[in-house]
Image 1 (spheres, rainbow, N blue to C red):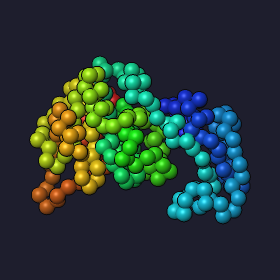
Image 2: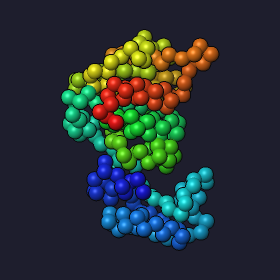
Image 3: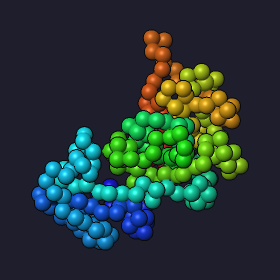
Image 4: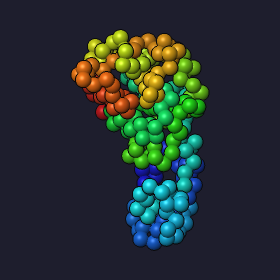
Length: 241
């Protein structure tokens, strides 16, 4: 439903994204039917017992299952950057090889919630956009621009030429969150759940950020850390909310 309502996706993008929607006989949502007809999305009957086969054993589909092409969600980096109003000092998230789809979805959800302009996702060594990611994001994969990048280090070079200040989230970060004013365009790199941000990538960041916490706790989940940083940025940019 979020994919059909989204004002981030163009009609052509929606047509490419949603291949077909399978509907159980009891699925009679009038708004859904209207949106499907408006966007000319093909439908098919969802036969009894076929839900798990189509959506996965643990999926809760409520009688509606969409077959999608995730590649249709992505924008090229150059196109995305050209659409930004740099005078407003936007912020973006850069995923640095996250492997857990639930973390990827949670980061996308937090980025959307706190007014970030987009989420950059590398093509390799990164959990792809799947049904689990879409579910964990609560549909925000359709509400915030997702940007395909070759790799993080190359993307950071491009971002710096465009005026972005790059921040690496690290337990050993030299700058404590709260000390930064975020008065320039900001790019936040979130690293792998286990190993964090790659050494070369961390070196490429302008600033490494750490989150002050009680000494009884060694670390925070990657998605939780990202949410805290995004919130702190949003406090200094209330116009983004």
